[in-house]
Length: 247
Image (tube, rainbow, N blue to C red; front, side):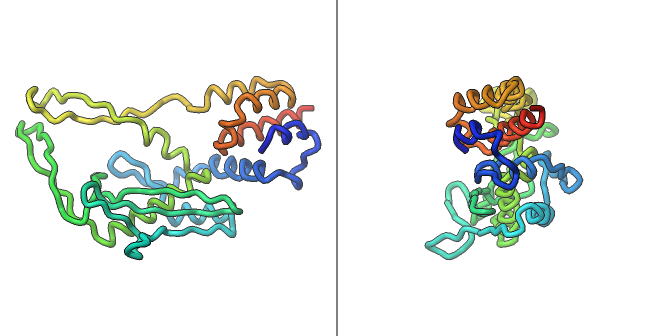
């Protein structure tokens, strides 16, 4: 969407939306869906079943397609780095808009799996000693689960269930465990999630506009951000419609 779309706002009708407006409308529709009743909790993380996710997505995009990216060297649907683990990639295309996503193959404790089993040290508070935890070698079953979870995450890039991933990529802060020895101790990592809405500032600015001209001016100030972010674009589109309805 360009700034001209906002200048022509009064002449824009639902049946004559621009491509960007249609994308924003679909993203807004998908991101507003409440899928909490279709999720499960496991090890502190929330999972949305791929079958439920695909079902809901196809209701909005009936012709959508997905692709599991294969390693061109092996023809297999995963990529291996012996040092760090196994990664899978998926793509989802809907009405000409394609998003890609990646996900490591993980075990039940969310530890990266490799082609061979390995161990890592964990501090046992009861015995006050370090003990080794084992991560089994990945199987095709583990890889298949990772692929389908990756597909669900890719659907979130289009908007479906995206709120479930809020704070997922926040940096981990390292704290020393009071239970472990002070010297040569292995830090305990705790993930702190961001509590503030990342779009709070722009939302407030958009909602503060009282005319389509003010909205257009604001759009021009943030044009580079809007072009690369369907969620922000959706906010502008929604506000534009509100202003038109109120006129």
